[in-house]
Image (cartoon, rainbow over all chains, first blue to last red):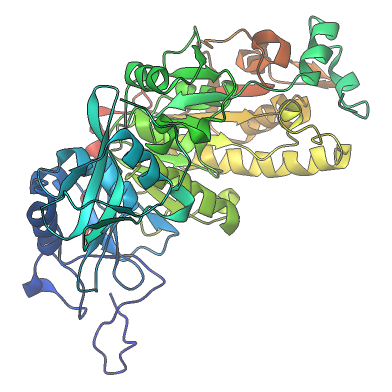
Length: 182
Length: 325
């Protein structure tokens, strides 16, 4: 790591490369960068996803706050077009999981998971916001699921505020899907 | 009806049934999806399709391949969940032939848009290091999108000219297995791309063959002794298939090995237009559209020479995987 964009020789965040997250705050060299420990804590605290889930994975930052998860280990930095897949948006007050991360690991979540009916699931997948006053859990980012093929399956990330569940499924993943009925 | 501009005439002497060959090339291709085993197994996909009323037929030769009756797979729940990916049947063959194992290092030289890459990620159980390389940034964006959609985390996306690919920065010197799904004249995709022949010229065939030779040579060099390289194209032209293999057999230390093709196929050709090729190119696989109601395809499996575990993925693959940060 040898980016001195800050102008004073202090390492900064270089948007053109992937830097591995430091293990802990004590090892942090780049200001504002999330640590591996913070990422694992966040998944456990927000969704109850056990830290062991990511035992073999490494976490990387490219661009401001965008965290990628990779299945193995590589020397850091990496000047590539992609290292694993995006998992989390940091460097903002409320960290936001990606749709793809929630689809991959959301089945391991034990809290802040909202089960949708078939009609609600279809609306959510199409990107529509909906009134959902019956939710009495936390506000903020939730994992929205529905019943499919005998299981609860995560659809994507919802943002719950003021009795409303906003679908934050990215446009590229929004789709008009069949209502599975009762 | 496709105007093939006489391109298909070139290959009439190679096929067993000219009428069936021409007729198959005229028909549109069935819509097919492959199950993404990183997200769901085939029976769960079948159950989900049943619940939403999506009609399909399961391919007899592979558990994880579904032929869709009508609805575009993009508007189904299994697709929305990343449980399936649109991928032509013959396009599933190269990864099956390469058979990369979990925890190994694998290079996909021409990876975008990533159907075969993501299939290999699933075979590797999303572990190890899978490098998906391509030259065009636009196509790499499609590769990244498909890998994300299917929940692939073991993929490094890279943009280099595969002919002089450098492994600098990885912390390892060679791959265990490599796929060269080469850019080609795409004659075999005529059922999917009815204008595939519009821009066909013999000059282009020769030009692209030069690129193919360069990529396949680099693939053999970058793969460890005893490792596996699979070469595939979606074209009929021997100039881009057997002639490329013949060239690389002469220039690099490797051999063509047999593999069991699960679809109906014929052997590679050893003679074409006054050229004679190494007899072992007969171990390559040619698939014509009328054989299995698919696109056309060509594939060969190579073993890299030298002392080494003959398996594409050695138990020792984890050795030396420590990296210095």
